[in-house]
Length: 122
Image (cartoon, rainbow, N blue to C red; front, side, top):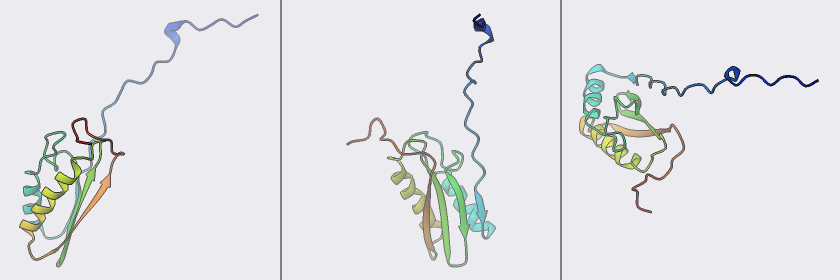
């Protein structure tokens, strides 16, 4: 005796696609005034892929401002890294303008592996 095949309507279905979880708010440490100035200016830096500013797009992971140095950590990825250089340069320009007498560091966290953008030159 063979066991009956289950009816097609009883077959499990693939889970429906879910939206990516929202990025956590950036970790901020340091004096409130310079933090606010830098974060406000970073909202003017646009991600060329999505068109959103890097703060609302969740690209800013952390901003740490100390007495003599500042570190900005950006999330780069989502498969499009050709624009990372552009975003990093603009974000670093914000740091230079707002914190002129400070040693500046820019870090990158790669969210996903990079693939060439469709219109990027080879």
